[in-house]
Each structure stands twice: as C-alpha cells, then as structure tokens.
Amino acid sequence: METVDTRQEILIQASRLFKKLGYRATTTREIAKAVNIKQPSLFHHFPNKKAIVEEIFSLSLNEAAVRIEEACRRDGPASERLHQYLVWDLSTLHRMPMAMSAIYTGDALKSEEFAELAAKLKAFYHSLEDLISQGIDSGEFVEIDPMLGRLIVASMTIAHLEYAEEVTVTDPDRIAREGADLILRAFRREQN
Amino acid sequence: METVDTRQEILIQASRLFKKLGYRATTTREIAKAVNIKQPSLFHHFPNKKAIVEEIFSLSLNEAAVRIEEACRRDGPASERLHQYLVWDLSTLHRMPMAMSAIYTGDALKSEEFAELAAKLKAFYHSLEDLISQGIDSGEFVEIDPMLGRLIVASMTIAHLEYAEEVTVTDPDRIAREGADLILRAFRREQN
DNA sequence: TAGCTTCCCTATCAAATGATAGGGAGCGGG
DNA sequence: CCCGCTCCCTATCATTTGATAGGGAAGCTA
Image 1 (cartoon, helix red, strand yellow):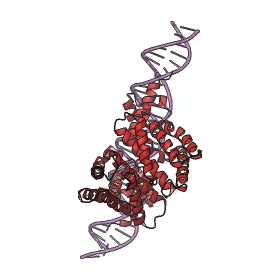
Image 2 (cartoon, chains in turn brown, yellow, purple, orange; image 1 turned 30 degrees about the vertical axis):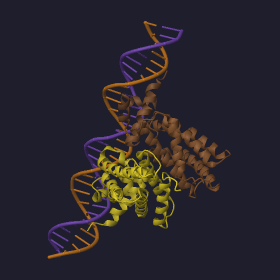
Image 3 (cartoon, rainbow over the protein chains, first blue to last red; image 1 turned 180 degrees about the vertical axis):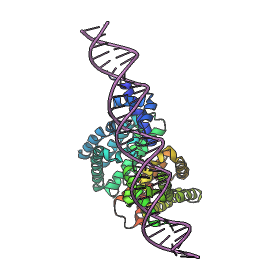
Image 4 (spheres, rainbow over the protein chains, first blue to last red; image 1 turned 90 degrees about the vertical axis):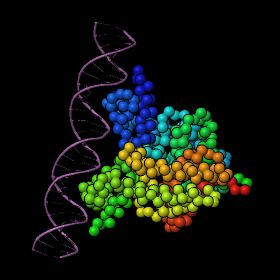
C-alpha cells in the first residue's frame, strides 16, 4: 500500500515553499529536505515536479469550477449566490493544510507548461464574470467592468487566504463568512 | 554616452516577461531576444539579472514609501488621506510603460536574495497599516484587522493595475480616481 | 591618424537542477 | 523461505541558465 503520509506531507511542504519562494525558485531538493527524504525519493510519489503543483491546484479548482457554474445558473439575487459561493470557497480553502494562496499568487500558472491549468482557471473566471454581470444588470452591484469585478473578487479572495494563513483560525466558517461579506462590500450598492 | 533607449527597452520588455512568466522563469536570453540584442549584451547595461528587477521595483516603491509615510502624519480624515495616496499611486503606475503588476504579483520578491527589497516593502506596508488603523479608530472604516485591511488595499491595487494593463487607458487620472474610490468602498463605513 | 569610449558580438564556463538508473531494506502473503 | 511490492537510498546525467572573456565596429576628440 502506498504511504499516504509522505505523499500528503510532500503536498503540504511543497505548497508552503511555493508560497514562500515561488514555484520555479523552489527546488525539488528543498521540498525533499522539508519532508525529510532525499530528492530522488520525491519521484516515487510524483512523476515530476509539475505533478505536485497540479495536484495542489486541482484540490482547490476542480470543485470550485463546478460550484461557480451552478451559482451562475441558479435563481435568486446574484449577490446572494455570489456570497454563498464565496463562503463555501473560503471555508474550504481555509480548512486545507496546504498554503493554497501559493497557487494563485505564485508563478506556476504563468508558465507555458501549465496551459491546461490556466485554461481551467480561465473558464472559472468566465463564470465568475458572468455572475458579476448578472448582479450589475439587476442593479445589485455598482456599474463596473465585469472583468475588473472578477479581478477584485479573485484578488480579495487571495488576500483573505493569505490573511487566514497568517493568523490562527479557530472557526473557518465564521472567518469565511466575514471574508465573503468583505468582498461583496467592495462593489455591492449601498442598501437603502 | 550610454544609450538610454536600449536600457529603457530592457526594463520594459523584462517587466512584461516577468509578468507573463514570473521572474525566475524568465531567462536573460528571452529578455535579450525581446530587446533584439544578444544575451551577453544585457550585462553591459545591468550588472546582473537581479539589478533589472530591482530597478523596476525602485521606480514604483521609492517615492511611494515617502508618500504613504507623509499621508500617515498629515492631519485630516484618514479616508481622505488614503484616497489621495491611492490616486497618486495608481495614476503614477498607470503612466509607466512597464508592466508594474509584474513586481508585486510575481515571484521575485519572495526570493531570499531580494531580502532588501522585501524589507522596503515591509516598511511600506507598515505605514499603510498605520493609516488604516487611524481610519478604524476614527470610525471611518469598518472594524477589521489592519493587517487584513492592508492586504486588501494591496491586492485591490494590483487588481486595478492588472485591469489597466489589459484595457486601453485614455485618461490615467480618471481611472486612478475610480480605482481609489473602489478600493475605499471595500471597507469605508456607509456614509449616512 | 591615434586613442578612447560605448555597445554589441561569438564562444565558453560553472553551477544549479530536474530526472533516471539501479540497489537494498522491510514486510506481507503463500 | 522466498517472491514481490513499497519506499527510500547513492550515484550520476543532461540540460538550462546566469555570467565572463575577449574582440571588433562605430563614433567622438584632439
């Protein structure tokens, strides 16, 4: 049976190093050292360095892509649907032992070799922009370019992730709600 | 006399590649190719690769650090001082021919060798948190951890930079004002 | 013209780094 | 007992990449 501990530990340590140094700057030797194994042993658990970051990425993006698309198609106020999605997203990410902000803030996605992942992310962004457009059309959000809205939601999500990685989180759900509230504040029209 | 054109072109092309690929993933050969010179010719204008990113970084941070500190010490509502600073910052960055978001979103700063730059940025963040604290104390801003406030201001600034780099900017001052408005919306209390 | 400076070139190096080859220890099943 | 599997090791390779050495052309000054 494959030891799941070492594999999981690789993901955790790699994500922290990716966050601290970036993907390219993090060597497989550093990852191995953090896991207390030798460098070639990494390749028993993952075929290559790329596969490590791909797995971390999939952990966060696969389900998120489905959920944001569902949120797009449901009925009801767009602001509520976006809020619900953000609460789920933040609480999920906050619970993960990996430093998930590493994936989005880092350099991994920018590389040519990660075109497939970048495409997934692009589709995700498309749904997010769609949802924001719905909110703008219904008058719930201020009138901004949906692309700018998407950039703001994404960057504030990452900011909140980075925040939660710094402080000790006692209640992931509560801090996720507060984060979602804060993100929506940025472009929700004042309620009168 | 040193040709300023090539030097400037190196900064511009390098910043775009840093944005697209990240600092570590961008090779000096790629930069040279974008500038239409050979790789070793780069080292006539800059002592090493690090110096290129340092110069781009200094362009944006040196004056910003002074201005944010001044904003901290001036009188008047904190929200107005922060707004003024943000308008200056965004309009300055939007006018630069370099892709300035490359510096903040990229992996360069994370590296050990850029500890000096990271320290500068840390001092800048300290002033920003101070200013946000003032606004929270005076009741202008919602009660959040100043660190979270700082992360949000920084990430939204970058989001706005990335936005302006995508669309064609006709009036940098106007888009800077709109950006500053949007950033402050995120945590300014509703005005009654 | 001679001499100096600027700027770019070709050729080349040394180090870092992702990945492979192949061996050995531990362990469980038959 | 031995086969096969898992998991880690040492040794090593091939490539990439930042940087250096040294030369040559163009332009300016005296």
